[in-house]
Structures are given as C-alpha cells and as structure tokens.
Length: 364
Image (cartoon, rainbow, N blue to C red; front, side):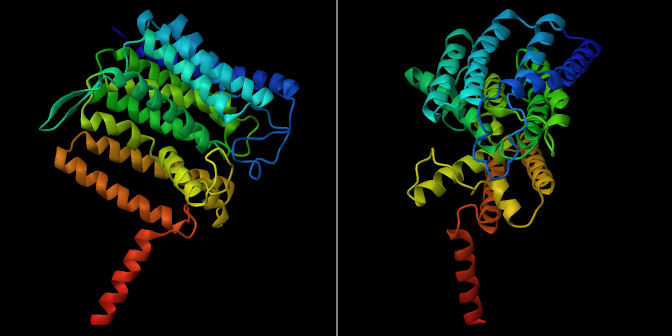
C-alpha cells in the first residue's frame, strides 16, 4: 500500500534529480555530438547545431533510479519495463549520436516491444465489445501489441519538432492517464498510477531546459522512450479491455496520432515515402500560418488539453454517448486539419460544406 506523502516525496525527488542531471548531461552530450543536428523533420526549425540532444537520458535515469530506490514497485512490473525501455533508449542514443535509418530504429523498437511482451503480463489479448462480448485475439495478440507500442513510440517521435512540444504533451497526456487509471479504470496494480506520476515528475524536471529557447533536446532517445512508456502504461489499462478503454489512450494522444495519420495520408497522396521528410506537420503548419515558435507550442498544449478533457468525459458516457462524442471530435478535428492545410489543398470536408452552402443559397 502506498502512502500519499511518500509518493509525493518520491515524485519531488525525481523532479529534482532530473533538474540536477540535465545540465550535466547537456555538457557531455555536446562533447560527444559528432554530427550537425538533423533533428527528425525539423532541420528548418531547429537551426542551432550547438544545442545538445539525448536529453531523454536524464528522464530515463532519474525515473528508474527513484523507482528502484525510493518506491516499492513489484519486480514483475518494473523489471520488464526497465529491460524493454533500456533497449528503446539505446536505440535512441545510437540514432542521436551516429544517425541510423528509420528501419533500424523500428527494429530497435520491435526488439524492445518483444522483450516487454515476453516478460510482462500486459498485452492486447482481447477486447470486450457491447452486445458482442469478449473477442480474443489469440495468436494475433503479439502482432497487435507490437503495432500498439510501435505506433505510440513513432507518434511521439514525429511530433517532437518544436522546443518543448513532445515533453509538454507527454506531461499533459500522462497526467490524464494517471487520473483516469486511478479513478476510473480500476487498474489492479496501483503501482502503475504511481509510476505514471513519477514519470510526469521526471519530465517536469527536464521541461524548463527543453521549452523555447531549448538548451537541450529530447532527441530520439527521449521521444521514443516517452512514446513507448505511454504505450506500456496504456496497455496496463487494457488488461480488461473495453471499447472505451481501448480508445482512451488514442484520444489522450490525439495530437501526435493526428499528426502521424495525416503525415501518412499526405505522403501517400504526394507519392512520397513515409520515411521522407516534409514540413507539413501540424506544428510547422501553425508557424507557417504566422504563429511564433512559442505560440505554436502553447496552442498545441491547449489542443492536447482539450483531447484530455474529452478522454475524461468518455468515462462518464454511455456507449452511444461515447460514439457521439468521438464523432463530434473527429469532425472538429478534420475541420481544424483542413483549415491549417495539414493535407495541402486536399480539403474534402470544407469543399463539401462549400458545395452545400452554394446549393442552399441557390434555392434561397
């Protein structure tokens, strides 16, 4: 049983440790940085070659040090998470240091996800659907769990294009997950909620150095680690998976997933490889529309907060209410995406509305 005061002290210690270790890491990261910064899709936005990367190492180290020494987390929970995320972090470090191909990064994530699947109790084994009951995935459980973790890791990696964006969205998303997990999903192990809030504390210690103007970046080390951890925590809430429990993590991470899905669609429409870089991401679109770097990041924080509120409301909704709520957010999201030009000139919903208005005026 966890005592609130002890958990609070552990969170404060985690945040303080990250605050202290980040400047040290920044110093050594600059020393070993062997290439001009090629930061995801953000070479135009991140022009500074003097800014250190690999910032995720400070979050990773502080998080696990305090978990192992200050909080009593069951070994069957913490060991698989530590082993699998260590593989993810090593993959990110190698990419931040030497630059590896997207295929090699994906391979590292798959290996980490496989380790987690084999040694933990959390996986996508079945889902409970209204009027249908339990649908078991059987031999597809491993594949679905792999896609789930790969999707979370890559989505966070793609959104990490502006100073403080991925770290801030992670704080908002994880806080929402911690609240929902503790109060609504009735996760058997309260250890998961404790770990979530401790990770939030670790990111908060890093965030002041990462917000605009950043003195250190998360790098693939941090972005992949945070995305993978969010994926793991979401699987804990899916141990007794329902329709709402399945979509909650996706709604909470609405901004990264929206950006990833539309990047795939955009590149498909333009006959580009998914691995190719472009400046069509949601954060770049806001800047090209006239927002400053800081304004774009804060705007996406607010949007992430809206997704989190929707996720909280889903816990109070009936099945029909949840469907209507999701439908409403999808329509609103599509309008927003088309207004900022996330898919270029492809604007089916706006064109349809324009056609309806023209026909309506014709008969007026």
